[in-house]
Length: 113
Length: 108
Image: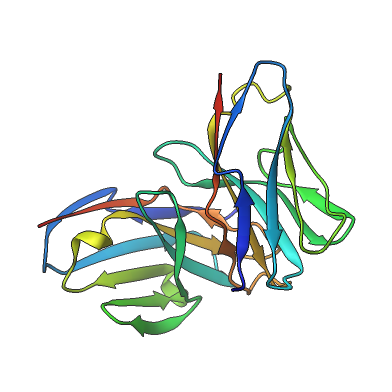
């Protein structure tokens, strides 16, 4: 089936540790996105990428990094510089163009040990 | 940037009742989507509806772009409809802006 796969579903981070969240899509979409959701709130954009080897910061990029080496993959690294990383992280993809709907993966819950 | 406001923030329904959720946005949009987030956190696409009316089973949505609002109708609600409903809008570029959501609880 076509879709967006995020892994792992649950992730725990120790103080000072970097962790990487995986996002893979087989929809052949050009654009991919990472969002953060805090309890009781909507989603906020962290980073997005429209093409391989290119990406742009969203509204809350500090403490995060991304790469886009392959069209189907867009991993997110939560660095030790992100002081409040506990949240639900959602990856999305779409065709290029703002008038294209975005489709979401099932998310990764990140917690601090 | 564009602002998205949803109302009501919370809604409790008896099973079988109908409801209307509202989304107001502050500028013209190229993209407007409605999502349902279930208790497990999965975000399900309901409608892509920058203008006009669409229906899918018991759900329908209407966007009046000139007046900058969208409505999501849920008829004959079921307990499985419970969760959070999000509206998200985009004017240009790729920054989809989400509202704060409406928490829906359907009681049996």
